[in-house]
Amino acid sequence: MRLRILTTALLAGILLIQPPIGTAQKRKRSKHAPAQIDRWYVFVSPDGDFTLSFPERPNREADEPGPVTAFKSYGLYTQNAMRFSVNFTEVPGDPNSRLANEWNDGFEQELLSKDREEKRRVVHTQRIGKNIFEAEIWDSGTDTGDGINYLRQTIVRHGRIYTLLCGSEIYGRPMNKSICRRFLNSMHFINQNAPASR
Image (cartoon, rainbow, N blue to C red; front, side):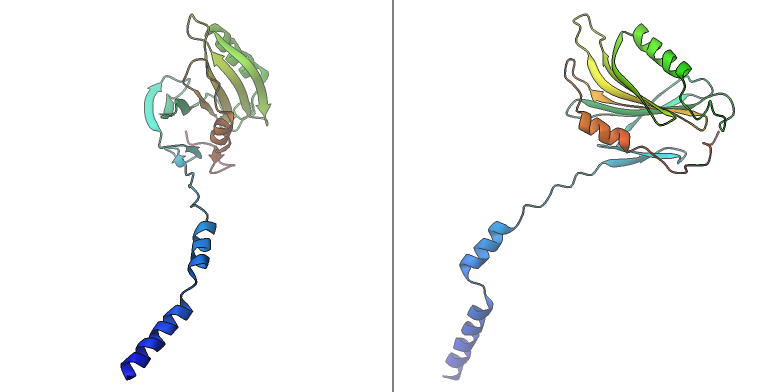
């Protein structure tokens, strides 16, 4: 008899604690699906002067000759046929001079002239601040006229030139501008005042 009373009391307690089935089902339905976290890889330059976010970890690419030091390059080709890259080198002269820290008409004309020689169609250009020059380009490297669309941003800072590139790798397909803008906007210099190490 005592066992029956204890069992009944225990069952009643469990029923009182447990929410009704309808309420539990409502709770399950009202729960939001977990948000997918969109994490990009934060790349820190070899000498620690800047960070830049890539969709995935970039690869070290072959050096190219530069005016003072070789261009160091890091790049990424994604599965959805996009290209992300950064390269940087030092320029001759005083890293604190105006020429080593500001974009000027001579740099711009030289770059655009090289684009014309390489059969690149420049759609749009703009200066961003005193030391950044950006160009949207269709690089038509084929006889069919189809091109590769990308954004190129060139930064002159403390005696260094940094070139960021983001675009489509499929001929004739426009780049995803919002993803490219996210990449370009993620460039941050760690020490804003100190000149880059030489």
